[in-house]
Length: 288
Length: 244
Image 1 (cartoon, rainbow over the protein chains, first blue to last red):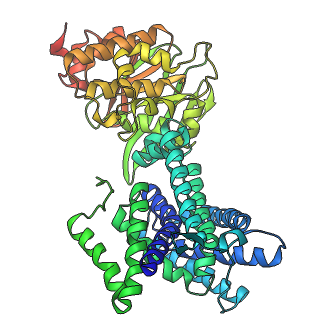
Image 2 (spheres, rainbow over the protein chains, first blue to last red):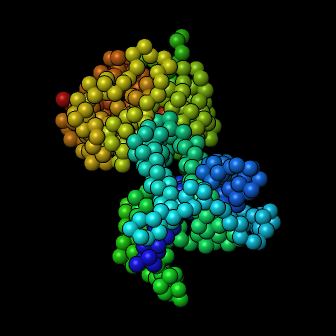
Image 3 (cartoon, each protein chain N blue to C red):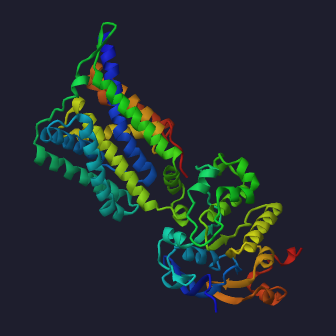
């Protein structure tokens, strides 16, 4: 019984982390048609920056470290988008190669700066003790991660669907030339979306620290999962990223726990089914 | 001489290698309607795209009330005071009617009576009831009204209307015509591209005719109406048989 409850909670927490990673990837891919393969590296860079900040600034708690890392990665993402990716235009092969190359550069820089040993990050003291309920111990930090993912999902939803800025972004996605012709600064908005997506991934890396820690290869472990989430949920769909993250969180956690040899098969099977029968994803829209 | 609302000076424009506009020049006087006519492929929409900055001209000048705008990005040209109602309407289909209007809102720089949501809904009463409907689900006529309303929300000093009657039923075309007449009466400077020359002649003060990318006529509307030879040579027979 304890096994199932703990694995369920692990699945939810991992799903929450996946959402923090995949939501930004999906937004950037859906809005800007940019497959940012450096997104996993943003997640890892966030984790290392957070770990470094906690080590070097006494008294800094995990939440402040996540904010700090989030803003730093957002700024780095913005520079990258403005200075490099913008020049590639809509050349998909160029985008894939350049963003993959950038992810290698980030990964090597992290290795040089912080070494090859995993850097663990402690959860805040008050969340380290398990919650005892009906004789079963629930790890409290897992709940906090799920709560963060839900808050991020709600925030993104409200921003995109309930504000004028969100409507301007959607107008730019519908018809970029027309949006510019009525005075919408589409280019600035897209940079802002890129920063936002990168920042959420960076903060997500820190929030994932107490569960995953920061280690070389974290980027390459996370990026394929984000891709699967987005393909499963539908490109550009926030709801799709949310539902897809938790589905993959469950499949991955239970797959590795129950059938460790087949974990990746179990992971990719649903993706193959979705691609075969619903290529736009569970919640995606078909684009003309 | 008063400054022209919009002055186009020896404009050259290309689509890739294809030379579309050859030294096009004309001027729109403030408060007037200029009808830009010509057959399919004459370069009318290219001209509109060049003014809006969507297709930056290779050379030539475009001045909005004396201020050079050629070569600026479309959002800057919009902020300078050019409003576009494009061919095919191009409302944002996944945005609601209300969102289509609010995303286009800009501060009025020059008018003491700026366009507001209330005034747009007063101009197009059916829009008000559909404000939360997705624009992609509107009928063609409703989308045309929305596209005009969206352009007006930017409080343009010059309004570009590219084939506003295209593909609409006669009753709706008449309504579009009444709307343009009302905007003109309020002093709006307008460039109107039309295939329906009857509609164009009924609204225009000035007529410019393009033929294969060159201006072949530039004069007052009174010089065109009744000039069957000019019309037959430059516009074919479109519109001449629909005289009301």
